[in-house]
Image (cartoon, rainbow, N blue to C red):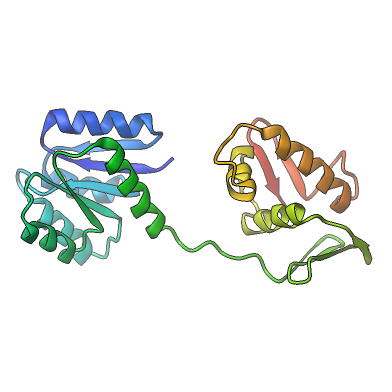
Length: 227
């Protein structure tokens, strides 16, 4: 769950933002002045900060500046009631990633937040050109697979599944995550599709598909690749 820190002294605004981001599945922390926001930025380790410019005890610009001077690169979106260009320029110069001027629609802010988070996410590591686990060898460049020295026919989708599993080796991945990343269904709930493809893939790469050692099921959560 992504964590967002809202630093806003307007109670109605902070409650609305807290409720909106909570509804969208974020874990939310709230501070009502600059000093408290600066402390929570370190203590709560948020993935994103929504930072009002005009705050008691310390301005949003000063909070942003101190975070950046201290090496904290958490994404920051400045919230300002003022539309002057100089405020926007100062916010960006102190290290903010984006700004939005009040009043604003929540969906616009959410879209900006998600865009900032995407830009801040580390580049996804690519699967290696070749990968070996057990007696299976996968050649992703040639789209060739062997098990016990004999060729195995994997479909393009099965190669995509294996590449995803290799990138996330040892992690529990949900069926929904696989649909999003491998099928790009955007969470359309056809999770049975994943189960059927995993079952076919196990028949090709596992010694005993009924008792898999490499692509294991994590009850009620998803799958984990142990190869």
